[in-house]
Length: 286
Image (cartoon, rainbow, N blue to C red; front, side):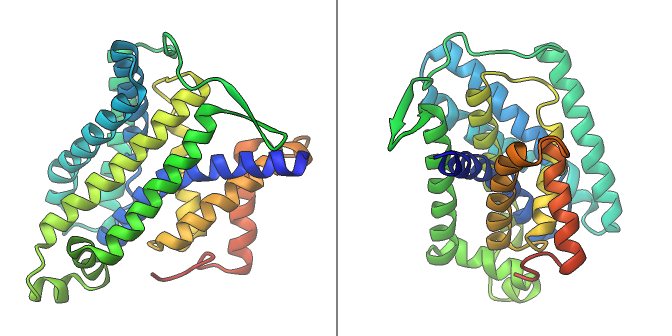
């Protein structure tokens, strides 16, 4: 039973990692930018959902508004920060992204205060017994939300006209443009979807931990980078699998390697081991 409990907890954590890291992968796949500030949007999603839930008492409505709002902010970030420097060397965008992430953390500290905030009455906290495994409702919702959003993204990119145009742009922007695809709109859509998914992840982590603080994006920022490297830069399927692998590895590692490595260092130990064997990551290419 301990094995099953650890596996389920790993899948829950891996699902949340996947929601964060897929946004990074989408941006890198399309623009070759390591969007570190993505973790700042994850934090913002947590704050918005917490405040809206405390105000309305309606968590589903709050997380929906939070995801849409953060998605729109992601589009604004693309327009104001990245679009003007797309022709610059890649390190310029990376430095801009790191600076933006640091600025976002300081803005959160000024607006929301330096200490963590909690839900007045945290929803979905009842514990359910599912086949002998005890899970809180919010943990079940987290894994269902991750599965739903990732499935919806997969169906969207495979079967919708806009999604097909998006895939074509990622594969060959010049060729897609020659066939009439509006590359600028695709880029905006890319940032909207990735940012909204990060907000969803931040909202669920805020609910599971019943805590939102200015620096809650710090650890996910570098862990998501490890995941997209492990999955093969720009590979969505690889990112998803790498997120689940790291989530499960952390879950088991905290029990069996807790005296050697802490939870957050397990992801990097795994990253180093994989890169020693396969330097391009688990799934290189797209």
